[in-house]
Image 1: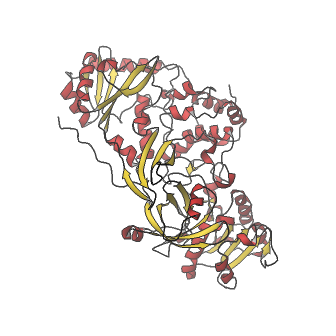
Image 2: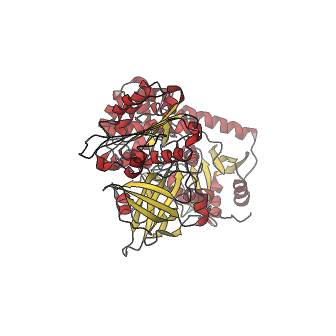
Image 3: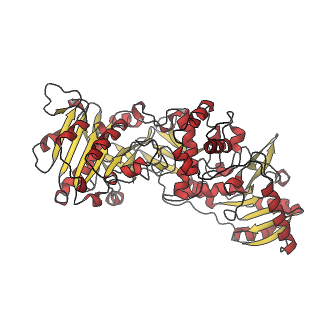
Length: 285
Length: 340
């Protein structure tokens, strides 16, 4: 008999994080920071491509991992930006990191927004709170390919003016004619010049061509059904409304089971679903 | 596939021969129960066992395993360990052979899991036929038979085993270690008769018709509230399940705080924190929703991806559950709308 040949393990380990250096940290609000990260290995950095809406697993050895959606645009290569709220062990530890520190990344994972399919259409983006993080990637990607799109409308709701993320960029964009940007807050202060009230109220102010508009929504779980109802009132198609879901995740590759949504997994089947898919997923919205 | 008849009295020779090159794992007695454990003496191997307490998954996907050792200062991986020990799992029933095929879909499909794969690639499977216990319902899912996923499958035909040889390794093992003979028509007749007796011996009637429809149509049914009231949330069903693959990952720091180990452990969707995210949001906050999810995923979620249900009817969860929640009763509740 031939001696039993032990089979060597494969060389690809999807659980092994790649080291990345923090190259910039911007305080956005007291709770959120924007981190710019660059993979240290030249080959890995050059090979790293992604779609808006995809996420990475941020890996801090000794603390753990957390799924974070990518905020920078795929059109900008060589780095990624992660907008991270200090809300748990991993994100809390990340907030203590300094520029130059090394962290781990796995990914990109999941299914993002259908950018190629969206081209040639009007775009209506609706964000609530931290939900702007993944949409920021899409917004900037559209910006870098602006001539490929029709009207682009962005509705963004926050609780207070202090919690508005990426405010510097949005303040600059207020006067741009190629982006209709409307910000709203629930609790204004004396300085607030934008709208007041829930993001759904802004639908009264916008015109939507239902035949040519793609929608994208990201925000707290409670927000989705109300925003979708407004989009449906505007007669937008269910399969042109895209939503991005947050779920607990460990592996990011469809194995650990934590991110189950109905009969799908958010990590591989999502996190971006169109509303036709989402309305067929139990406990999704 | 080709076939041989292996006399029962040469099985110890086969086990002894295998032990020269492999770690042999098989059903051995522990008190009144059976477990899959290393077979120290061929006489300990109990091919007449009913069901083991834990399934075979732990030999591929252990209850706790080190994924990698790390260094904190520069967030670097210091070492990855893969278990490539040559092993034979000797004596798996058809349900357990089938359960590994279901696990393979998850762990060896897209983005294969190298820890599972290293063990799977280095493990031979010898299956053995059984007779159903009063808890078994593998016939409901068609997992009472297996035609692949093993190197050798031994079907009891009285004095010997009607051996199906599925792999090159299986053929070499049989040639090398046991005196066996070619099958005759009478042997095949005996195999068929034994198979018929096996199929006739099942006592659990499970009506699996239209389950995916019922799971969605009765998603808001009060049967789930009633099951949720019974469930203790202990997760024993997941531990003993040969197809439950969910896991958790955590980091364990060494005393000097410079190094540590990333560890994965079995997890259960029956635990409260399983679907919880930051800010206190929990997508399955009630026991009812968690019991429902376990069945929804096994009978529909997994099916929608791999065209099989994620259950092999081994009856282990029926034995383990202190609240008498099990697939036979849950499927019946789905069919009738009544929780017995």
